[in-house]
Length: 412
Image (cartoon, rainbow, N blue to C red; front, side, top):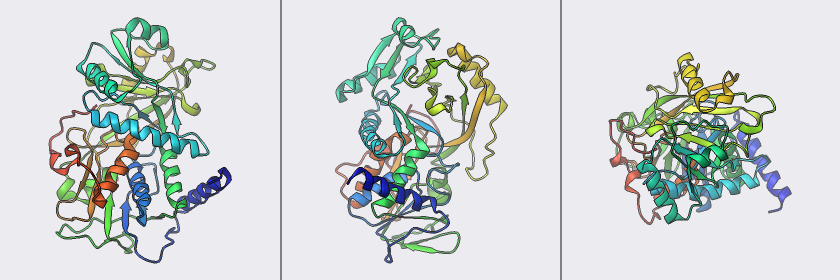
């Protein structure tokens, strides 16, 4: 495909996605698979099924990466440091290649290779285990002592920090743009997309034959995938209502000093202060949106439909206090933007990718738990293989049976 042809196809797909007032379902016959949820897990699953020759219909209530979606917003970190959890390090690396390829095809960049720096107050097991995994997988990760941290990243105050892990190949994914571009490619390749709010399926045994939209339309298919983020427990309350926990999360952007390039891409990497598991993280000033910072602590439980998305003054005060301690040049920096979103956590942070126990043709994909976005391509391949019966080996950690009802975070 020439660059001109590819660009035309993507523009056609983007137009189809943008036209949410009218369904873009070209086929007259029922699809093989309906994927509910056009977020990062849903679209990459739809793409993987499409590549396997399945006719797929993608449905979303408000549109790909909409304002309330867990896949919406500006940026997400992609990194391979997961302690001993090799499954996630491997998935992040495999997914990175596909994100880079998608970015190369897009009109605007979807991946910024900023590098990612984790830093630690003491030699944690997380550091040793991450390095062991990275050496097995061949990642070019650097262990950096405090003296060299201060020399290489002088915009950060490393008081109390002993060492860091730097991952030069990773960085930032542009979340909303990435999902919308993937949906546009899916449509340009012949996939069908339509807007529609899906009603909860009946809680009964046996194959699911059709789903009903809130407007009364019915969609039939041989198989169904539900990748609905924080709405997944609302669609399957009896099964998932006590196993997926949506929580409130707040994100802030600040304006760096005028003319100061220390916080720009190429100077400051994506970063995370491990802080003995109470993580703060952020990004450089990407595309002039500002210095991003957030506290990776699970907030209070929320309903994604009724969540008040007004940032709390107490959250802003806590973020500003941390930022001004670690990044002293940002003391008094103007707040330029704030967002309230949500995680949808499993009990320990593991993803959910499993068949419904009573509905053999229904696949449940979710529980991104705040770290799932980067894994989208690998999740899509895994989900498509599981649904089509071609998965070589199931990962027990992704199973429904492994999902508890009491939160105890174990995946960072």
